[in-house]
Length: 189
Image: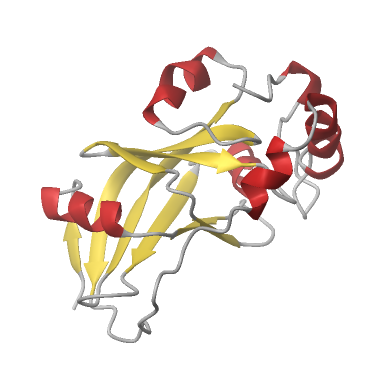
């Protein structure tokens, strides 16, 4: 049976910090719902109703497009235990995208280990925490992070990263604008 909380309790934070991956779900008012897996130790609990993750360059930018297209900026982040006791933990709330090159990004990025190719920090103001049993989630053994994404962007020039942002990150799969302006973003630390 699920339980609901108005804030992230200390036991929730401890659970979150043990997880190696999480999932982000977003949706525009009309269009496709997006669910993205995330890892690379990029998630931080900043307070009992405040979390953020460092978002790496990928083949799309659905979360940012959805946050821009939606007045309520709804966002859900889910963690599930792949080892130990079963549990699923969801964080619901309103998200914001803090673009690389902005003062907000610069203020928050010291909370993270810098990742080559990082393009934004997604911050969530949590208004609901929900836990549920997770007994249907299989057990998996964690081996290691895949280093290929970080190596890929570390080996590219700033110009190549900006070109990629211009080609792949300016519109969602539904054609919604992401607000990425590649030439104004400072790609590397």
